[in-house]
Image (cartoon, rainbow, N blue to C red):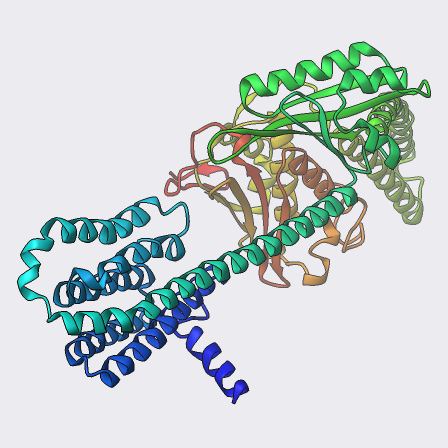
Length: 587
C-alpha cells in the first residue's frame, strides 16, 4: 500500500514534465504539482467534514474550489506554469473571500488570505519580483477590502450556530494548511539546495576539465585579476607546482625578483597589461630576453581582457609561445639563402662562361670542316662527304643544345623591373621572325586579340617561339594549321596554341615538359628536348601552369595560364581573328 501511494505521489508530481524541459523547469513543475496535490487532499478532507456536519453551503463552495484546482491542473499539463501559479492563488483567494462572506467574520476564514500571501514566495524565484508583488497583492488587497466592507457583508452571514460549527470545523484546516505551506517551502529549499550543490559540483568538474585542457596546450597560458596579480598558471608556463602555487596572488615584479630576472622585462610586461586594459582589446608583441640560465629566448606574447555580459572585467588572459627555435631556423635559413644565392650566381657565371667558351671552338670546328669540304671538292668520296655533313650537323646540334641549356638556366631569372607587355605585339614579332618558315611550310596561322600583361616581353616571346616552332616542326600534313587563342577566366588568362600535327600519346603529356625528354630521334625531327622545359619554367615563374591535350594523328593543343594578379585590366578580345596565310594578312 505504501509503495502504491509512493508511486502515485511520484506519478502525479511529474504530471506535465516534458523531455524538452530543463532540469530546473522540471523541478518547478514537480513543486507546483505537489502543492496542488496537498491542496486537493486538504480541501477534499474539508469537503467530507462539511458534509458530515451538514454544512451543505460550505460543502458546495469547497466543491467549487476543488473544481478550480482541476482547472489549474490542466494549465500545468499544458505547460503554462506561471499562469497556473497565478490561477491557483486567484482560486484560493476567491474561495476564501466567498466563505468569509457567507460564514461571517466570527469564523475568521479571511485569515486564510494571509497564508495565501506566502504562496508567491514558494511559487516564484527571487528574481521574479513583479510576479511575486502582484501575486501577494492578490491576497493582501482582498484581505484589506473585506475588513473595510465587513459591515455590508453582515446581511449575508449564516446563523450563529452554523458560523460556530464552521469555526469549529475549519480551525484544523488552517493549521493543516499552514503546516503544508511550511512543508512545501522547506521541500523547495531542500530541492534548490540540492540543485545548487549539483551546480557547484558541475562547475568544479568543469573547472578541473578546463585546467586539464589548458595544461595540455603547449603554450604558456596565465590569467591576471583586476590588480594584475596571477590567478591561474598552466603547467606549460611553469612546470614546478610549488612555484605555481606560490605565484598565485603575486605580480610580475614579485616573480622577477624571486627568480633574479631582468626587472625591465617585468615592467614591460606590466605596461602591456595596462595597454590591453586601456584599449579593451588584445595586444600582441614579440619579446626577447635572457632567462635565468643565461640563454637568449624569443617569444610571441599576447594579452586580452575578458569581460562579462555586463561589461565587467573578469580577468586578463595572457599567452606566450616560445619561438626561439623558429628564430634560430630563420637565421640559418637566411644564411642558407645567402649561400644559395651566391652559388646560383656562381653557377650563372659558370653557365655564361661555359656557353661562351664552348661556342668558339664549335664554330671553329664547323668552319674548318666546311673549308676542308670546299678545298677537297671532287677529291672526297661520297662516304667521306657524308661523314663531314653528319659531323657538321652534330656540331650545330651541340651548339643549339648549349644555347638551349643557357636559356633554360636563365628562364626563371627576371632581373628587370616588372614591365608592361602587349602580348599582341610580342606575337606579331615572333611571327615576323618566323616568316620564312611559315611561308616555306605553307602554314595557316590564326589568332585572337591578346591582353596586355605585366611580364618580360623576352620571356613571353620565348614561350610563343617554342610553341609555334614545335607546332610547325611536328606537322607533316599538306595544309598545316595553327590557331592561337586567349580566354579570360575568373582569376587567370588561359592562352592556347592548337595545331593539326602528329599529336602526342596521352602517357607522355607530362613527360614532354621535362628537360631533355624527346619522343623522336634527331634523325626524325631536329631538337634538343629543352624547348618545352624552358616554356614551362617561364610560365611557372609567373605563377602560371602549362599542360597539353592531344591525340595521335589529330593534333595537339598546348595551354599555359597567367594569373590575373600579374596583368593589367585590359582583357583579351574574343571575336577579332587575324589570319596569316603564307604570311599575307587576310584580315
